[in-house]
Image (tube, rainbow, N blue to C red; front, side):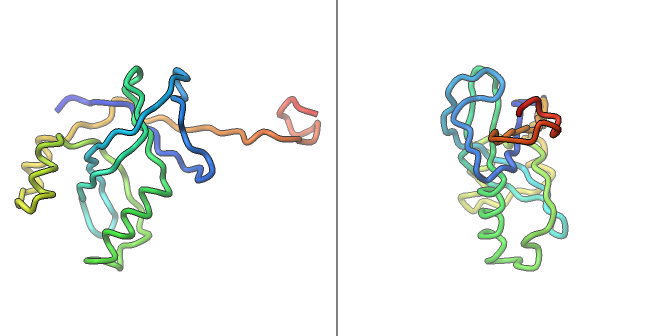
Amino acid sequence: MPPRYGFILNPHAGTRLSKCPRCEKLTYPRKFAFFIHVNGWGPIALGKTCKYCSRCELIMMHQDELEAELAHSFSKFAPEVIGNDYLVLGTIERRVWQKGAEGEETEVGEVLKHVADFKKVYDLEYDPGGWYPADAGRGRG
């Protein structure tokens, strides 16, 4: 499938994205099916609700929430991989993901035909503000 959506994995647990960091418009929750590779396990399909900006086609996922969901899922069938590195590779067509969620077995090769990479992956830069020494290079005093 052709690449789809921009993507941000927000590593800042204290920062929630109610506005799009690109266009400053309000975001809203939307459920996506993600294709994630977990080291020591392999690929996993995970349905997750994330903040979404339809104007920028940007998905914003909070890292702490994702890691909690992965830990919960793996605690049932593979606790040894909890805490392993992972990579969110793209989104899966919802109808294909739903078949798997309903218990219908689907081979990885078939699922890969319905995975869309991200158009662009962005880094979220965050400045918590506050007072800093004048020589801190932030232009604040």
